[in-house]
Length: 186
Image (cartoon, rainbow, N blue to C red; front, side, top):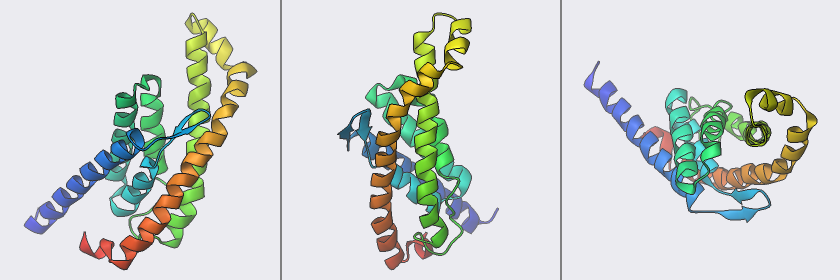
């Protein structure tokens, strides 16, 4: 491996680490209360990581950053769902475009909103089933009943607002970073 290749890999790892820390900070410290928890801006940095880093590295950045915020915040039941959901948020975006605010990355924003809302809806139904069941048999029966799925519907509005808020931060950030040609500098 050439020295330039090693340098680029190291830069990407450092950028992923900084962005993961930023995701944690913007998720844990910047909280806007909502009816089912809080809205945060951490996903805006997940979208940014997805547009700047190779997909596997962006997925790690997203998952670790979100998971750390849940750990710090005491949301231990959400650590595994958050890890999975945040990693999935990266997939609709592309780092291969010359621009951060490329057409594909702008189209990815509503897809990411759906991933967030559906992902946390499923997670909430499973968590409600786990916490309501006394045994594995009761868990399975409860999970396949309408009760947890009906109760989990309340998460949709908050999670859509969460995704829209992060998109609203990502778009001007992406445009500003394109103006300074950030992709050409990293």
